[in-house]
Image (cartoon, rainbow, N blue to C red; front, side, top):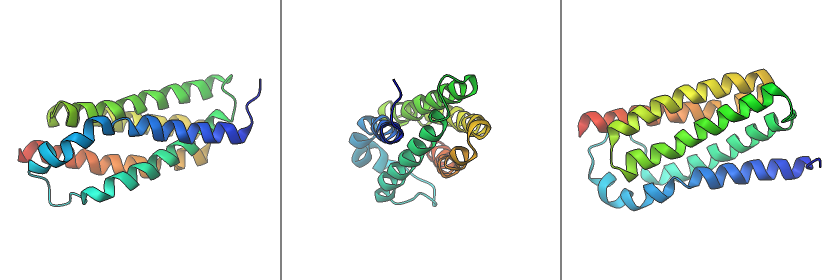
Amino acid sequence: MKIPYQAKLLLSIVACILIGSSGSIFTMPKIATWYSALAKPWFTPPSWLFAPVWFTLFTLMGISLYLVWDKGFGKKNVRSAIYVFAFQFALNVLWSLLFFGLESPLLGLICIVALWISIALTIWKFYQVSRPAAYLLIPYICWVSIATALNYGVLVLN
């Protein structure tokens, strides 16, 4: 059965938003307590900025995923790219558990470095399938670069 492109696009976006937002289960309870008490680097964005940025990034990730998926999941390079995408997404959620849930900037830093590398690999794999899909992930790796520096700063300052 062929899935209409509109359904694939919507499914890709909604799945990325829902899965990506699942990390907030670990994050939200810690913002006003543990996280607010931490010393943070001078370049830390205001807390209100994180939710709209992540919503935007998850939406872009969903569109990017759709552009690759639409090339045909039966193709080996498409499947490979999607598997790498899924792995980096799992690391994204895992970071929230490690950093916020376990209150561990060290484990968070280890995870976010692995996340950054896996995002770079995802961009490379997506580029081989769909250049626009790869380009849509550039804001994501930029934001995770900032988050990596923030995570490191929190680790050093605390």
